[in-house]
Length: 214
Image 1 (tube, rainbow, N blue to C red):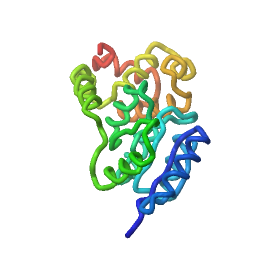
Image 2: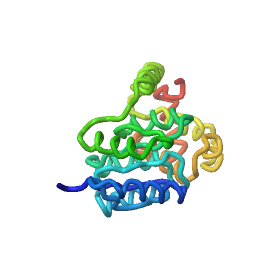
Image 3: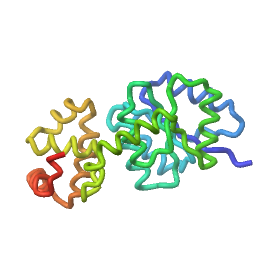
Image 4: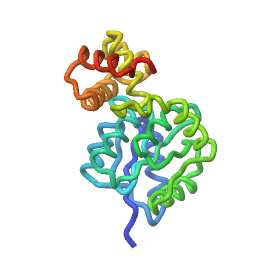
């Protein structure tokens, strides 16, 4: 029986190691790579082609949400499970909107973690009732944003707002509690979605199309 290939991404050495040890004990799982940030996770996916990525949300250089978006764009067959704490609901919603298959809480029992990996590998998703209802609420609240003609996510619109106000990447990163690298990634995604090459053009297009009113 072919093993399920898993890549682990977490910036905390201790969590990374303990996940590695615990999951390696499962006969049907094989840990093919370890990553300490989103960029390493993307490289690991391109190198090892895992079936599943266990992705931490808050990581330096590039966070788990931005990494998920890029992995899903480049290698859609790879399934991504977000590893999260209770407080990170907004980020989980963002990751799910980019195509993540679900999420698991970091405090979960290793047995349940392995079970979750199997569910996703078999084509299932891991979303609790509570998260599903939050998603529906969030989608209804953001229906205007979601349907903006350029397909910008809520987070991208936040970044765009700050960009249009003339904030520098560093300031935007601080305001949104993200790394500067992540903001750069968001900005390049925004530019490509809006089909512009610079800030002023992006800000102008955002105002003309009414995105800034959301």
